[in-house]
Image (cartoon, rainbow, N blue to C red; front, top):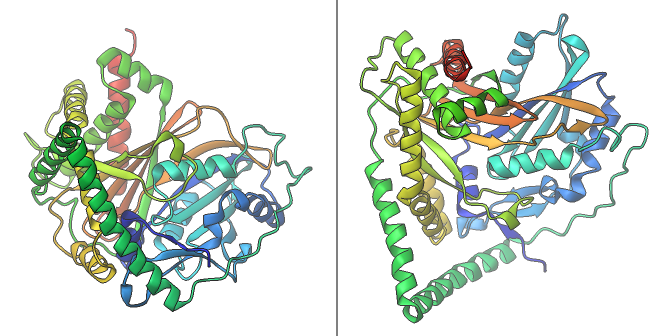
Length: 466
């Protein structure tokens, strides 16, 4: 029997945290040049690439009695049509209509009894364009591997994968799914091997005590810093959420963002985080919350993926907790504060410490592992007020079926007690900010979007030659 691949601790955690109010899929909206493809062309283009994305034909299988983390198994009943949807916007097909459609799509949970992904073909967009809305469960991809998926689906030249020269899908036969008994045996075997790995690590530490001490010191310091960040003041950004979502976006010019970086300091990520901080300041002021001297703590995911892991799915991320200076009215001061904060966090060891916690959670028995994640999801949110993630995309234009990809907007899911999340993406000289909000508690998401846009323009104006 070929052993099924077990979900890593973070992937399994995202799977366990899925609920009616917390749909844990990440996603994107792609706008492309027209004319739109036919249904057959669209589904055929995706299916032809699934041999390079074998996970897209796999579903998640629980281990009996949760004796181990779930595993990935081939879906014997896989059909591409179960994962492809299509719709047409009513005339005039403006961006507001597209946004409302995308909000409805993202508010619907994925069917976790099947491979957890879905792609929508959207026709009728104004300007002779069309759109593609993608959603994939967070148990399958993180932000970086999600960008890799787009690199597989899309082409680097317009003449590749064109309708005139379609690539036929490769033959595929599902591997037999493991029996319940085999799943139990494998889970017990993995539990034993985990204990053996701990023993080997201990022996290596004894053989090289100096290196072990340095590594342990870094991890312990990181864990200490994690502990210090686990409380944050209550704010309108946190609290119970409902099942429906709002989603909107802001556009920027990557060249201008780099000008800000060159003139005022920091990195591209620092500039964008400063713009987000300015937008949050506007949003909180509009809600009547005091902001002077305040910060908003945002979890900022940090990729732990090695260069040789690009192209593999799953989550290989840790995190830092950044204090966004919403109490500063001056945009240049906000950027300088963000730059100092992020520079300190990179040296803090927090990503390593968080990674240690996640690795340690993988040693828990399956039933206890699931219980810990589910219990934690329902506790009051004290560690952070929002999530902000930055995923660099392709610097050159990409194509699907010979049509050029014009824009990419990222979608980041909400947490159980987190009402707003922010995704930042770059592509072909542009930068976009996708903001997700809980529909019930954040009806005024446009205030935040306008605030981010205004804050970014303020920074660009400061860096522009006079």
